[in-house]
Image (tube, rainbow, N blue to C red; front, top):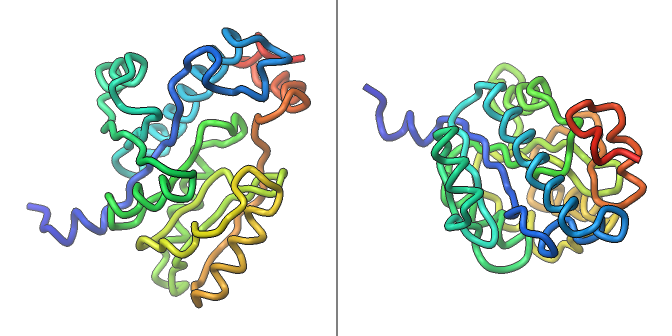
Length: 217
């Protein structure tokens, strides 16, 4: 039987997603796609991220929903996939991530839904960075984004200071996070950078992915 400590130390994956509501999601893509198609892309990206998280088979998968877990889309995910469902906290992205890490308390990988290039192997590599005792283990692991942010953050323990005073949505996010990591004396690993879908120019890269062909340019 698993002990309380065993359950606490179990690694999990949190998937941050916004409900695919026209006009309320992927707003920077609306000029190129229209509100309805942008919402449909958000739905497809969420399903992709959830599939990748489940295929990695690292541990339990939790979907953190915005604006809240009562949205019909998220309830359907819970019914069909059996994932845990949580409502994102109030506040900026940093405050919402702090709440997610605090709720789990043990090792956690957190991903968004903007990176179609993310694969199960990326999650496995990130998990290994937190688990590898032979290498001293890392306190944190990141997959940077080409635009200056990051598409994955993993922590062995909650580290609220990493998310304070960050210019979310800017090209300075990863650089500012490195400063926080160094200041806290944490040991971290950065895996190869990936790209995410935020702006109309990013849509052209979707052509490499058959499941996203309808939104490619």
